[in-house]
Image (tube, rainbow, N blue to C red):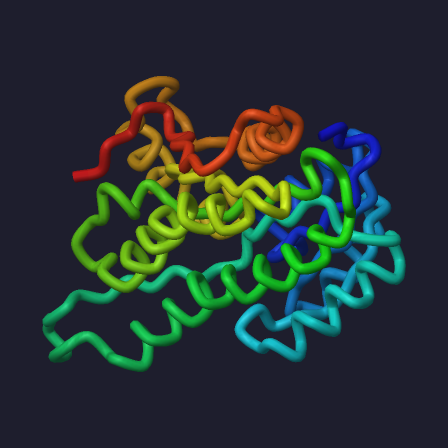
Length: 248
């Protein structure tokens, strides 16, 4: 699929990996609608020529309305990149007692169910495109925590492992509709949240990366998402982008 002719939606597109992806896609000529629950995303999206639609990924009606707006503005949907998510750090049993069930449930709700909520509705629109090949491409965000989850990452790792695990069956489900599905599993990236940490903490994290010893740049995630969109043989795969980092 040629990005210059694509119509894309990007969740979590107001900041971090989502904003970098939305910006890169616009630079490549795609039409883009940013879906985010933060109204500040309106200004962010306008800054790189994208549309904005407010959406809570965990709410079916909210996402349906946002996708309807995207279709009205762009004439359809060819690409869906899901970057919306939350991080929870909490031990299964720690000083304060057992892991909060509410925080575990919320992590699954946003990261996993929210991702599936968006892709199922985006796929329904892609199926209407009626091409012989490449009616659409879905790119979800997993994490290396899906494979190397650390202490305190039970909820986060579970949510991201599930995203990796559903990639192949969804690709098989949507094969008849000529829609491809992949996931990206990023390592430690220099998102605004991480860049806000003290420099010595950032340096410590970067030192754990095998090569190159630095945090990943959001633009590198964006370029991988673009590669998946444009390479028509990429399907059903979860791709690590982590500088060969293996967390302990």
